[in-house]
Image 1 (cartoon, rainbow, N blue to C red):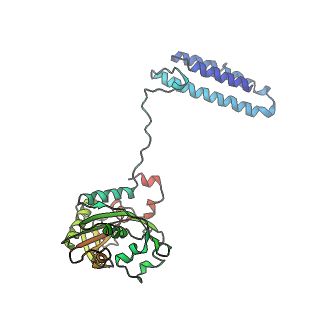
Image 2: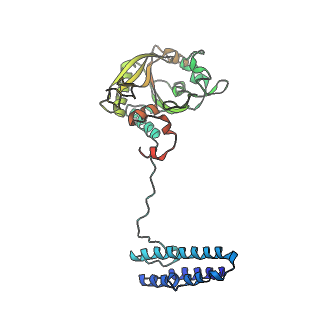
Image 3: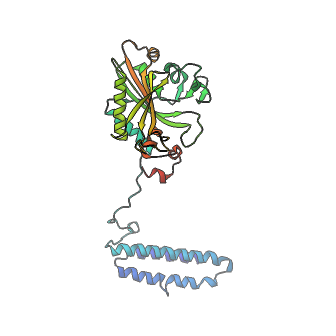
Length: 338
């Protein structure tokens, strides 16, 4: 019986490949699938098969019936559109438009990094990269961070062994660039950084930063303010306001925290900005002379400024995202919105 089913399938494929009209396919359908057709005749033989083989035999007949039905349906539709299949390889209509596969999109973090690079490129900044596994010297010592600073403990930094660690800031790239290049320097350094923070809506053990550095003769704090103002207007919109608050960083002096008017409530006050109307987005300041000393720059001749911001933070502010974990869960429902 199984051999007969295989012969019937072979005959069917030969015949369906030779049909040329809708009338031909209709006759083929009656011959094989009609009430008195070949498949119906096979159905009538099921009771004659030994009981232990009936289930398998019946399943094979149904499978063959479904295959014939599907192929006849396909050819009927194609003949209706004027396409006549000539061989088994041509059982599709080459005149039909192709199926459009779903298009991927950039991850919002990647998109923000690209936007930041484009904004600073307009201001003449180059892009620089550095290693994520870093020496303690570049992550702390050369940045004028003292040996007893809290950030150097195991609670705030991922140490691999001795003086090797996962960088906790992309400021390390600034040191590496200044070691290799004399002023003028104008760079941004985007990339991943790592800190042993407990994961919650605002924190992650891995996130992205972009650091900026400009060094030349006669660079002032006014230049820093204007560069950041241009970036903020470009990224967040012309209506966003900026303010500086005095702060402290070991590698800049004077230093400041930079806030923008809350893009969620337009500065009126909401839960995102703690009802203050302002949101902190970055730290900045004039490069400390001790940093220049580490890279053998003449601090009497050159001045410069540096700044750093979290990519996730500015992305959340721009798009109104309230949980950093959404960036890393790979939920297509979230990612497809961008």
